Image 1 (cartoon, helix red, strand yellow):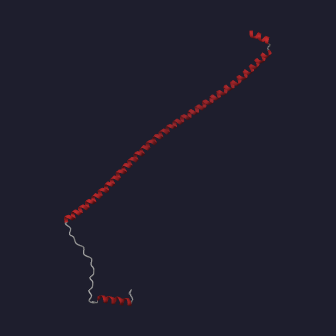
Image 2 (cartoon, helix red, strand yellow):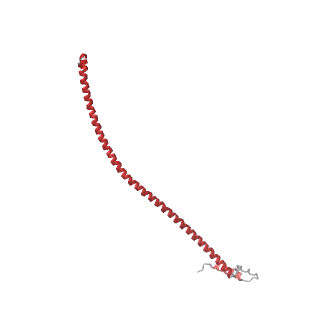
Image 3 (cartoon, helix red, strand yellow):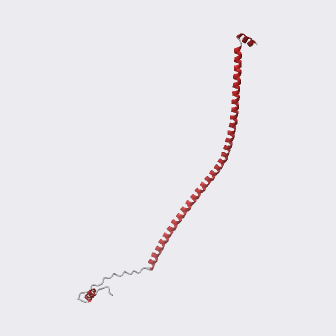
Length: 167
């Protein structure tokens, strides 16, 4: 089976016959691309060109290596700086731990001092209570004696008072 119908085949055949028939008209030449000009390169020029290309490639590789080396150097410097910073922080943490452990001793001492002070204050409060009780007792005794003296003075006559004052 053909893709073309009988009518299409006949039309193609007629057209090809017409094109192949020599009508006296010149057939236009087929346009050809011009052939590239062949240039023969001098071996010395080729060697120079290849050497320049190799030099450029080596220079580019050296630049890449230098950049990589600089990156590595910067990274190492950053790593050293970070290590120094971490060491400094560790030293500070150690100092803080020592200070805190010292605070534990101070805190224990403060608790002991506080307990001793509270105990002593309780003793002083007990003594103050004793003194207060003694003062209350002495006031009561004093009041009784003063009342007894007033009663005696009230019972005395003035003449008798003069006698007792002389003796």
